Structure formats: C-alpha cells, structure tokens
Length: 119
Image 1: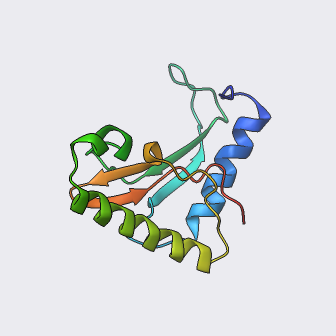
Image 2: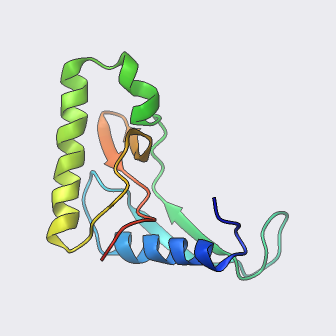
C-alpha cells in the first residue's frame, strides 16, 4: 500500500478520479466530488487528495458470496458485466475486477475502485 504523502498514492487517486469521472452507470461507483485538503485536520495534511463517492453500505461480494444463492450471484455478475461494458465502450479498462471491489446497495451490485484503471 502507498503512503498518503507519496507520489504513487497521488497518481492512484488522480487516475481513479480521471477514469471514473466520465462514467455514468448504475453498476459503476459514482464519484461525487474530489479535491485536496485545504485545512489541516487530525490525520489529514494540507494538500492531501480526497474523493467523495456514493455510499454502498451492504458489503462486498467477497463478504457476501458464500451466503448468496446461484440466482443472486448470477444477477450480481450480470450487473457488473453491464457496468464493465459501459466503461469499455468509453475506453476505460478497470484492471482490478475482484469480489472485494464489488459492493452492494440493496440488490444492486456496483463495481468500485478504479485506481488501476487504464484509459
């Protein structure tokens, strides 16, 4: 993992914002805002990057998969693939699709973490 004050960390944050900002699909994480910290606060340095994204409070596929039935798993997979098709049609490759990067909001599966995406 990168340190928050390192150049590679900044690169990952900027890449995620750049990759996900142009995407608008219900099965891809929605980025609301981004910027840099303007005031020092506990644990946050001035100039550190931040990203605000939609809340998907119902856990990850990695955590939920063992308790899901085949029909639910299939539905989640179809939703993720639909989101990926949207991203690919816009020239964005996710490059880190895994169960831990699929989050849920109710019955909606959402692909998150575009930090390694390629445009």
